Image (tube, rainbow, N blue to C red; front, side, top):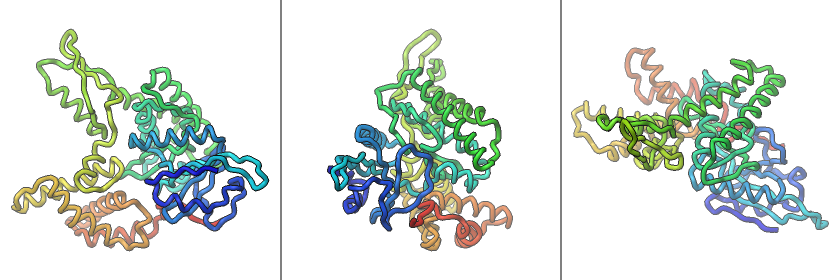
Length: 408
């Protein structure tokens, strides 16, 4: 038997003592936990380790090795997918009978499968954020030449993202990585996604009676429309008037607002001006995340980063209005982290911090403070806002660090 472990995956070595000589379905251990998940064609179990929670999936060696490599590639490109933690091959039962390989990934903290997203109504207006998240995930994968081949709600986990959702890939069995996808390949991937989504939504209605805003086929097709709109904005050519060079910066600013950076632009002289071309490979997601990480060291989702950056800007402006010398952006961010963000998080009782990721908790706290100030007609302050948020919102919310952690 051979066990490959990813050192960056935390304490994956604490998986060595598990009963690898048994089929995964037959494992009996107090470390096995039940976690809500999508529908899988292979056996999936979750194991509680010292370094966190791990998902173990049993599948043929060839598929396991390919998925392991693909997840490593996605992680290198900082794409939203679960992190590979290890691969176990060459397993045999005690009588020598060979067993399938096991792919080990780290459980994504604070993530929810789509059925739990719908059951908990995690956002008041749920369908738009959910469809946007799925469309953006497909765009981001296609930008780097990743053909999924099995996009579905069951193969995705969702994280809260400051009033929106972000989607993470959790299954890459049918995927492949290429230098660039042709329009036909992208269209084929979208066809698969539409078919899978429509079927899953029909099953969901039949099983739970959930009310869809529109017909399941139209809802699935809406993902394609959102995808195509975002893809055009990121990659479409644009003719720039030489007398209006600011059009180049306007296009880049629009992409930054969408959360994408541009590594390189190409300007080709044509009749009437210059054709501005953005190659998909140089359009990189995570504009606000990278800026916040550089300023504060906080690693968040994109909309969370946008929200926290806005609060840093407001904090800096408030100091200027108070007559203080305008500090640099870096100094303001450091002062905000020390005077605002960290005290707010520290004021939340430790036993409640597993309800939300820290950045999402701070975003919800800001929203709650705004609501309290609107109702009171004056600024109620951070301390009162935290107390009201903890007692009125957070204490009754379900724990989302691990959605469910129950021993069988």
